[in-house]
Image (tube, rainbow over all chains, first blue to last red; front, side, top):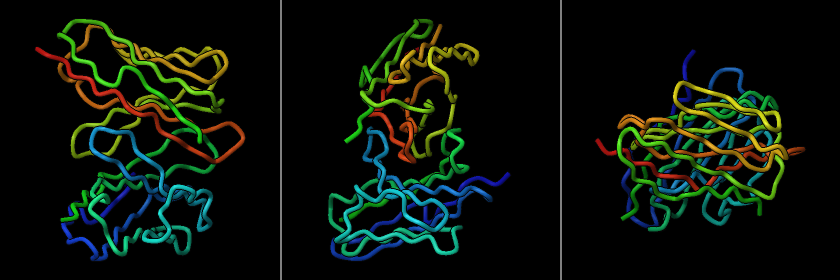
Amino acid sequence: EAGVAQSPRYKIIEKRQSVAFWCNPISGHATLYWYQQILGQGPKLLIQFQNNGVVDDSQLPKDRFSAERLKGVDSTLKIQPAKLEDSAVYLCASSPSGTGFGAFFGQGTRLTVV
Amino acid sequence: TQLLEQSPQFLSIQEGENLTVYCNSSSVFSSLQWYRQEPGEGPVLLVTVVTGGEVKKLKRLTFQFGDARKDSSLHITAAQTGDTGLYLCAGLISGTYKYIFGTGTRLKVLA
């Protein structure tokens, strides 16, 4: 079974530029999460989708971050404009709906804003 | 804001020692997971616990879910250098779709 795919693995941009990350979850997984992880800390949920609907985006900085999950499969997360404090690893994860079996993570995208 | 507090935040021990990591919250969880994360990788699922009081063993790792399903512990027996990593607990808040992560415990096992 293929895992969660994310791209790119690394991205370096200047502040005020825009960037987009892509995620393809495990086939059949209804729930998709985007997390931001600062070095050495636990992941912080940015947005959670159930199929193509948003379940929780309470911690998403909506003035600069946006995410979509068209057709309930893959997803993109965009930052526009980026700030220095957005430097982090952005993790995508997926899980079967409502089973509570935990989430399966991609390798993440390491973003550096200079 | 629901929180999952982990303790200790950092732990450095010698190979062969035992250790316990704790995960505590005021929220009730319908399930709770433990993950290990290595540098440059995403977290990898170790175990899921769903029943209050449940104990699961995975080789030298023992996981326990509190009776009230608000807390959990991870015990490692005879730690090895390969156990080094960031340990994360995470839980599905009961009655919701909210899945939150703990603050993390960074473990370093010295040879």
